[in-house]
Image 1 (cartoon, helix red, strand yellow):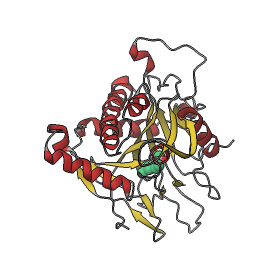
Image 2: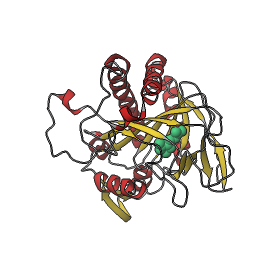
Image 3: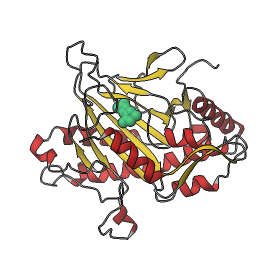
Length: 319
Ligand SMILES: O=C(O)CCC(=O)C(=O)O
Ligand SMILES: [Fe+2]
């Protein structure tokens, strides 16, 4: 059994010369990380630091708004604002000590004006009133950030597909076509001074989708479970690195070859912690079916992306 590590991997050689032997090394490093801990930190990814800073600034500005203004944008679990304690990621713990804001792909941008009824996870975005937060400080940079990270996530999917021997890569293309994909702004207040073990920022969970690309601020709090030893391993915040991890869909799809690993957040940093995960959850109609090492359908679960997302949301957003 390989040691449990969360390696830092530099993507720049792959981005510059995808056919070079240096790029092959990067691809191999990514595949190994996904097949062991299921987590790695990605640097040299090409997303401008300035855009990341704008996304964090947007998050701080929004979460600083009065509660009554934020509440006006709540009510849809996959878009807009989510109050502290709305989600409970871990059964048996208190609701998560975090507030959030979800942004999906901007459907109207493709020239189609969406009309109701909307499919789940395909609703239009909601935005704060421009009297409170100008578009130049929120909507515009966040949509640009969404597009940039979506593009990066597609590159990672191609790398991961190339690592699956005999895997029909056309299913990955179908998965990435008009996907459910969201940027989630998160704010964790400092952990209260108590030894109540049921308090968590984000309860222990695995991610629902294919891959997650998480931007952390300088405040620690994210921990990944080493299932061999049952130890929680801290993921050191690294400025402008993405913490990339595998979600449940890719774990099932690859027959467990890529691992979706349990993680949680406890913000004991003493500071306000902000993080910005991006989730690639895939085309709602795409079927996820367990494939064995030869690429044929194996035993086990078959479900669509939409079915899976609905059931995971229902389990963690109980009313
Ligand atoms: O905030 C973090 O560092 C992690 C968040 C997370 O695990 C999630 O939103 O799925
Ligand atoms: Fe997560």
